[in-house]
Image 1 (cartoon, rainbow, N blue to C red):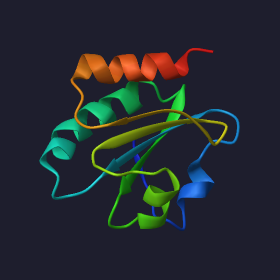
Image 2: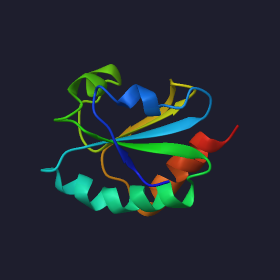
Image 3: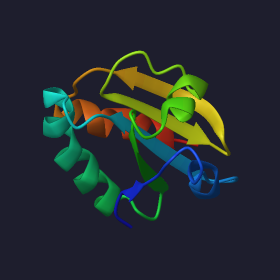
Image 4: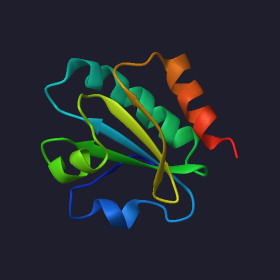
Length: 107
């Protein structure tokens, strides 16, 4: 599955109630976000059977950003069953992104 772009009104329908969900908070005017987005897209494609990936433009999802206490972009939020299990704000190298995902997907 690719990245699903969500709004405040649609985000809850895509958050997995039992599995993992990765929220990628970004904005169109954020340069680090634009560098990270292709890496998140690739990770989403490679791990589609492990978790849903949701793209949250902070201008389109301000309530969702407040809900998960997003103070800067890019921010990655990993949920298990709708509950926060890990969060990272700031740019990541591909290896760091893979480690963030690997850590979250461990049982």
